[in-house]
Amino acid sequence: MIRIDDAEDARIAHYRAVRDRDLAGRGGRFVAEGEVVIMALLSGRSRFRPESLLLSETRAEALAPVLSQLPRDLPVFVAGQRVMDAIVGFHIHRGALAIGRRGETADPTSLLSGLPQPALVLGLVGLSNHDNVGGAFRNAAAFGADAVLLDRSSCDPLYRKAVRVSVGASLLVPFAWTETADDMVRALEDSGFAVVALSPQGSELLDRETWPERTALLVGAEGPGLPPALIDRLRSVRISMAPGFDSLNVATAAGIALHAVWTSRRRHCAD
Amino acid sequence: MIRIDDAEDARIAHYRAVRDRDLAGRGGRFVAEGEVVIMALLSGRSRFRPESLLLSETRAEALAPVLSQLPRDLPVFVAGQRVMDAIVGFHIHRGALAIGRRGETADPTSLLSGLPQPALVLGLVGLSNHDNVGGAFRNAAAFGADAVLLDRSSCDPLYRKAVRVSVGASLLVPFAWTETADDMVRALEDSGFAVVALSPQGSELLDRETWPERTALLVGAEGPGLPPALIDRLRSVRISMAPGFDSLNVATAAGIALHAVWTSRRRHCAD
Image (tube, rainbow over all chains, first blue to last red; front, top):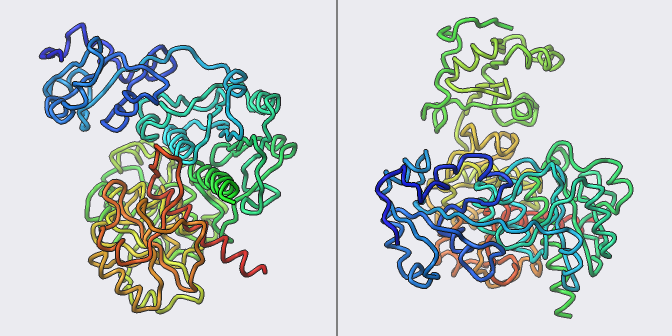
């Protein structure tokens, strides 16, 4: 544990850049915030490695049993809450941050070819809202999705807020980028996935579906949705809703569809 | 349309108090924000009446066809974006606000006794997060819930952010308050509702359930969940999740459960 009393200390430079795009965006590092997320980062299931931790004094005390298990070469910086807030530039009420390393970006084709059988993939198209991307990852983890694909107009699942909303799921569920939605569909079909577009305009009802061994569910942003040409050429599925209010949050819609695939497979296995 | 050029104009006094608790909280008025929410408030399906609108110039132009249909005695204030921001005290990027009147608070027993047969009610216990309450209302509307009950530790569905996240659903779905969760269960049971607790500790699986004619689903806050004594004495249901990540957002969990009841009833009616 390394005591930090000066917000300008060179050793915690990365924590002074939490709001910078190079750190928050797609650079080599990312920020994990809060105890639950940091526990996910420190767990054996995380796809990413921690580089350091920055904890408030009270949080360091609470986490002492966990900290004693960490590799000895992982720096754990400890600061008073005021120093911590001064470092980061705003109040960190959870009192716990970590810097993680992104490592190599996964190639979608290699990622997909390495998935088990059966496999379930969630594809995000145009999801530019961090809450929705984080929520989609949380649901992907909860319902056993094996991977998430994102097109380049979707936002970074390793952005601090997305990681936080995902409750750490974006550190656990493998993901990869494709340039466009068409590239995503091509990569999925080349790897033997049946690609299903989830859309209020879908031609089939979600709960009447059966699901192929390798299924990918695609969702688009609230409002624009998936490109119409894509919906036309794919199998498309809709969630039944009450007349007069056909409006669901995209992460919730993804969660309902993932849950449907998950329960249908579990039921199948139990039979 | 009433032109406003001065942020201190007495006629738009209510809009200067948008962040005040008396307006945002449980006073006589509430704030609706954004075009979709305001359209819900102006629709025949809203349970609440608008008192006035405050629009930016560009928004007023875009909404001209709608505005021409409004009652002549409903004041529509129009201001430049800068004046509008000065009135409210922060940037209103949607450029559209309305003040609504809360009217009488519904009595839970009267609300429940007036519901149709079959009926579906969502009960929120300890939901102190506006996003979650808004999200729960959105899902309640999407899956045809007839009413929402809230205990006093849950936050106000008419708070600006909750209304916005609900996409107007909290103006449409009838709701009522009970003091405690126990009061809520009592009111529901007295009105002939089967009350089902949704919990990760639930004894039955959601997708194996059949649903009584009058069903109420109860959810608790993420983390604490519903009081254990309540889970013990009610029928309790859990959502199947992947091992090692049994974590769902409460509004999403409510959405998945409401969707299950909705589709099971729709299927039943179709048979």
